[in-house]
Length: 252
Image (cartoon, rainbow, N blue to C red; front, top):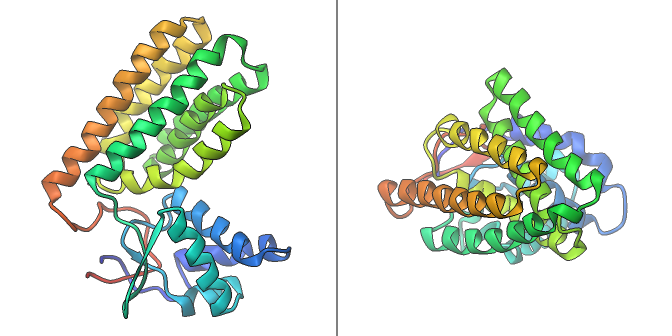
């Protein structure tokens, strides 16, 4: 594993601000949600070791609570437990990425096909997410561009107006962020696809559903290919590309 040793500072320090979310019932579930959000936002990179001591201090929760949260995240395919080594944010395989993009295509295509009858507020979310990506580009914050890209495509799937699709896409976002970690630079990954998000948004607004579906299919196939190619070039078990500082990580 790669990354800096930071204890309760850095990425874990940012988690301390989330304590208010844990002052409700189902603490382990809330801890899992907080960690999943930090994975989705690129704050916890693939291969990061999740130290019980540092996390417990940052979130002010017990080790038993953390272990229950870890079990939930294992079930969501976001972390792995290694005997006598600890818990790590998962590093995906090319097969994982193929599977994720198969599901992603089904969910987003459902949204595109429903776009002509979508609620105005759901259509607005597509444009809001794109504007967030463009603003992040202006700041040179390509990790934030990646987060906005996820929200953009979540909004595209959301055009279906289905609570189940919304729930499924929400869970898928964190796995998609793990897939992004295979590409050496966030800028190299997200800059060309931001341009294509702009095209997709324009097609959606024009009401050309057939054209949107064709473009979306090409887009997702190209994105999958970029990620899988980067994984295979790096080789099995290779550390992820550079990203935000990790909490604590070690090379396996």
